[in-house]
Length: 417
Image 1 (tube, rainbow, N blue to C red):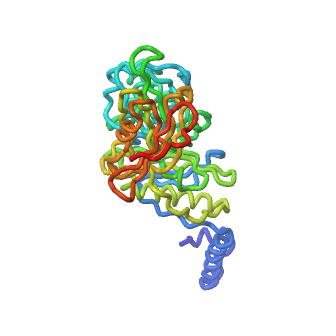
Image 2 (cartoon, helix red, strand yellow; image 1 turned 135 degrees about the vertical axis):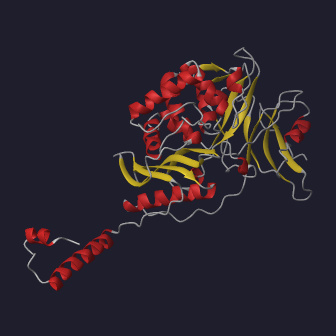
Image 3 (cartoon, one colour; image 1 turned 60 degrees about the horizontal axis):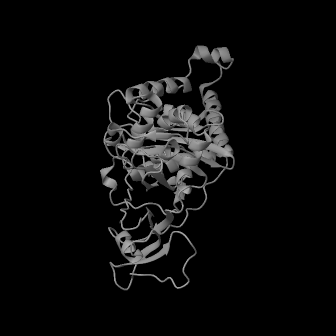
């Protein structure tokens, strides 16, 4: 406990021992009472190896668990990739896809050598689908090469104050010299979300990307659907967006921001053991932070029906293939997860091409997209699939309603199966 010399300096060294005990016990109980009066929230349980909760408006760290521990950041790397690309590329500029970028390991948005896309469409593919091919395409356009872009990333991270990070690539695939920390990722996200386009993209739940095939600007184009991996967008009040990440070494990672009652909070979670614990860690941290500001968590929302999202273009005489990928980056355990329901949102480039495509919501049985049936029903004419749903009378058949892309809806249009 305290030395007699220290007590003498306080002027209470000669008091009886029993009286000294009463004084210190009273002080301790007073401190506990003060905590109860202020309603201090209990510290949240966090299963992740490292985590940070930050108020970006003030820079205050409200919670930290091993905040400066260097760990592989997986695809949360792409927040910095997007930030550097936004500062160096025209969002409406056209970018060509190299053979090297197109051959990047999964996850991919499906770019092919010689394809072209607008920078903003590649950013949607980077941040929603976590496309590694989009990451390398942006890196080559902004930095000349992947190593050149990595130098730009490290310079930007140092400028922001992320001094315990080092980046070797734009996507976060494993590399012993590629690492970051939960605190650094919170700082990087804090900077990135000040860009309106970045904030708009990460707040989008699904989009359609326009990818041109061939060298001509008006050559053949296809529309690629992408869906966010951020579960908080659909389930946590005030979620503004974020970026997930997974590799077997990094485990499950996330960085994102939520704003409630005018109070913004950034949460960064590194190396959570499973996807379930990742989202629980994030919610626990956010609940704790908002409780400190007197903003109670709302009642849990009822579960939403499962929908499969698709974007379809069916040119005359050709059947298009729809790919719906729901994996979190390289997570091979996520094959069975379905997309969170949301209306498909076309990017600016896709909006210019509305005569070719419309958004569709699909609730088909697993493995039954209904696209081939729609193509057959259209008799080779350009169509958009409006709805695809299970036919309860004759599963696994699919009921498909088809309407022309241009012109008004036919009054006598009926579902075809």
